[in-house]
Image 1 (cartoon, rainbow, N blue to C red):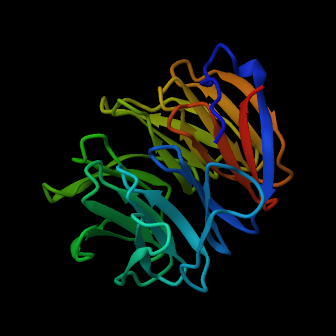
Image 2 (cartoon, rainbow, N blue to C red; image 1 turned 90 degrees about the vertical axis):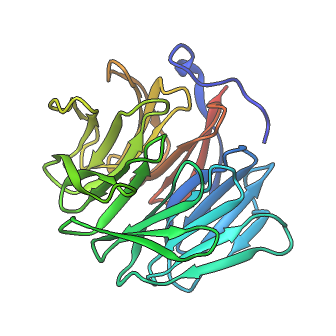
Length: 306
């Protein structure tokens, strides 16, 4: 990928759409930790772009005949995990571009909607339509935990930076905090007025943001205080992504817009208009110089500074 200036609060006026490509039905977009790979997941499996964007991807991974619902890179970039509508979790070892090692994990009783690696890369969490979070050992692929407490489908998962806590969002409207190693019961941080569609952890902090069909973004912290509520997108908020430096938050929703917020003041800084259908997925690259978005219009858009 071409190197670009880092996006920050002072240069957002120069933020523009740099490129667009089509992919079919899109569920998730993710940059690798090194920034050299861009993964796109959806109804057509997973596409990996390496060093360029647009046209044919460098690699296509056909995970299954069923749509891929979520993907995640391990912290060292050596593994890619995918949750599928066929109830399986798959893990690829990205050590060789010609031969990928793959594990298929069985255990869920419904579509797997969310996956997340622990910060040390040893544990993978998955959750979905069976209302259960499962924990897996990445190396051996063995089940090492089962967390129950949500009353409806799991939609989003994220570990804290120490790996001691696991956050979850669900169709039951709640945002919860789990302590997998301690085996303690989960703490309900709070609830939205409708189901939670995405969560994002603020880098270098214990704070968390959640997106909901109730059209708001809410911020959660360890204080237990009532979370700030941002009216964000008409029709609902579908996707969130913090910039790597934690100063800005990007959100996408049913109004087909991408909105950039000041993460501290929660003030809207910029509106990006490009998609013609809901914005379903967002991710900043590791240097904070690129934002990628995926929409219900089957388009992937790359945003950067003009």
